[in-house]
Image 1 (cartoon, helix red, strand yellow):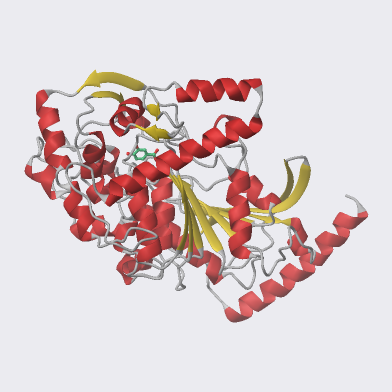
Image 2 (cartoon, rainbow, N blue to C red):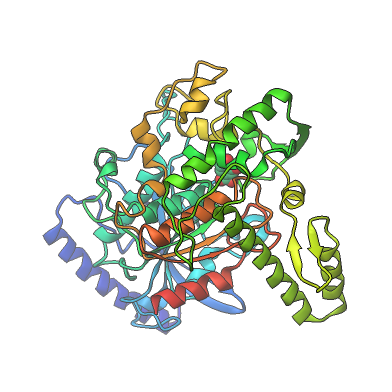
Length: 505
Ligand code: DHB
């Protein structure tokens, strides 16, 4: 050990000692106080620079845990913050706290580490540390979690309750922990994106209180500052109808095995075509969607007229969605043109040759909507989220201690082909961010990304979430649909942390 690290260690030991003595004086018996001595040290490299950190791993964040494999959190802190240092202009007092969940497919997710992402991709948490953020990555129970007796212990609303409890743990230890608990920024993808949005939407809502109490969550606030949301599988009550409204009359599919919904795993596709009965169901579901859209009483951004929609998809919501997609295409083309290399020219030519892209006599580029949706392709069958066979990941999310699968929409229940019961409507409500925007202490800043090649849920779902966050909760929302990006997240870390810096500095 060199002299400097010895000096740092003894300084920290002194700091920790002070913390411990104040802790025992003030919080005797409080099992939710963080032990600042229980850490290991390490370094990670990001874009050529080395970042030294302290790791506090496996912290159980509730006093009465149900499952300590999942109700734990890993916290990583730039070592500089224990030495009075600065990283990227942040200090131990001002550093935002990056709060990435690891949930996919509404399955249980373990506390996140600093290991590389899928396929060796850069880790968002490492990028966060390099940008001077404190990283607190919570685990959460999920729809398949069971105890030794085979009782399900992670059905809804367990996953969101766990994330809230982890936020409360951070606030409960804010005097010990470097980082600003008023700058918590959640991050998640797919089901995890939905949870990131829900955590951000539902701050301090009393609806979750009994569940938080039952697991011994700290008595603290659970609102957060901002949310990064990738391709959220949210608004499940309306996801069936939104999906058919988008893919109506697109009857060929490439479907995913139910066990592979999780975006973390390799996804295998099976090809097929809808039966007559499935096509009829598609029409039935599709025609229910506009009524929901109209009930939201949202406005068209910029001109403030009421946002409405209809069966023939000629309303403002449809225009808005297609505008986002066309803007993304135009940006992609400009990017390739700016690049100017032979390879970019070739890519541009290939792009413009796609069957759904039209170029008029003035060189104006547009997208043929029907041809575009055909190209993107249906991935799910009608009853995409609440299926008449009650066998989707979402049906499993809404099970209970002894019942694995339940319906959660009246229509699927009424037309069910199984004897699956209906989920408790209060629990269904607890899982949808849309229900809390404007009705809770919602986050001020949102960054929502949903790729133009994403077929896991309808484009209307993230668009309505973005509009609602802006208009119902008064949030500042950065929404974009990156070109050709499939169902995935954490693919634009530089931009993600540029956004973090903009909202925090
Ligand atoms: C995920 C994907 C889905 O298509 C879905 O219905 C639920 C979750 C996911 O990747 O997390």
